[in-house]
Amino acid sequence: MEKKNLDWSNLGFQYIQTDKRYVSNYKNGAWDEGCLASDANIVLNECAGVFQYAQTVFEGLKAYTTEDGKIVTFRPDLNAERMIDSAKRLEMPAFPKERFIDAVTQTVKANAAWVPPFGSGATLYIRPYMFGSSPVIGVSPAEEYQFRILTTPVGPYFKGGAKPITIKVSDFDRAAPHGTGHIKAGLNYAMSLHAIVTAHEEGYAENMYLDAATRTKVEETGGANFIFVTKDGKVVTPKSSSILPSITRRSLLYVAKEYLGLETEEREVTLEEVPEFTECGLCGTAAVVSPVGKIVDHGKEICFASGMEEMGPVTKKLYDTLTGIQMGRIEAPEGWIHVIE
Image 1 (cartoon, helix red, strand yellow):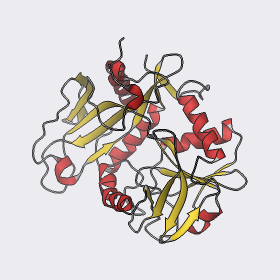
Image 2 (cartoon, helix red, strand yellow; image 1 turned 45 degrees about the vertical axis):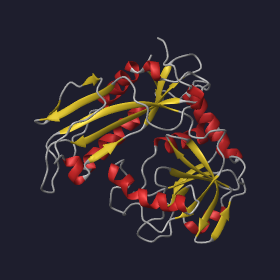
Image 3 (cartoon, helix red, strand yellow; image 1 turned 180 degrees about the horizontal axis):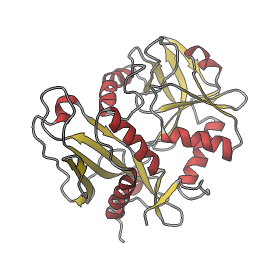
Image 4 (cartoon, helix red, strand yellow; image 1 turned 135 degrees about the vertical axis):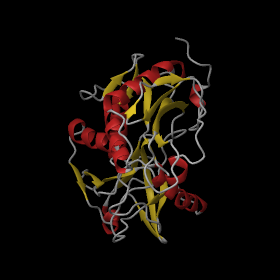
């Protein structure tokens, strides 16, 4: 199989159309068999539920070329489970777990020529998504849905290495205590756009959102979970019912405990105690870990001991170990790596 003629080492993090995408439609209470399609365009009625009431959920994962030449994905079963939870919360039909994994496999295999080679730093980003496709004018769930998967090759999130970023404590709320912060719904990300544009205009890379009820506890950023390291090397992540259950975060906690022998803790983290941590990072599919060097709370600077030049030592070990597992350099826990071909 011949790879596409791309400058793999200089890809950006943006959409490039690939050859095939997966499509399945839900009608009369059941999903059809689904198929691979060549057309990247979607034609919908002007009154489709996705347009009128934002009835859409999505996922994000990657396909990698490992050191031994295999094309693999990382824990797609967890993406399938999270998408089922997201769909249920928005009164959408669940796309079955085994079918989700099979659809990912089919789509990646059909676009194997677009999977970047090992060592390029690039990956094939996979975006499963679902939306209400039938007309809805009264506020109610749609009756018909479409599930799709697109792929696009992307470069490393950080060009030239992961330099620590500066973020700000946001005045905006990301999610209500009993809202939709724990699912991957498009509406959550639409809500974050004004806040992130405002942060960028002020010179910050991201926002730290606090809990909406008391505005004293750390939640997450617009698209990533927090991970902190204490002075004695314990890895701590905030716990809240309105935080998205990041697959990367869960994997990093396992790696910390089982591979690196570190103590881990998931608990409520107050903004007041953040200065006591020595390292801070944001974790998610795109970058795995983005180091944070400084947090600005309305003019008050919280500077981490790890500094603004490089990742902290514990964060770096976590990053290196998890990416080593993903790329096949380190043996993975059972079930973590799904081989495509």
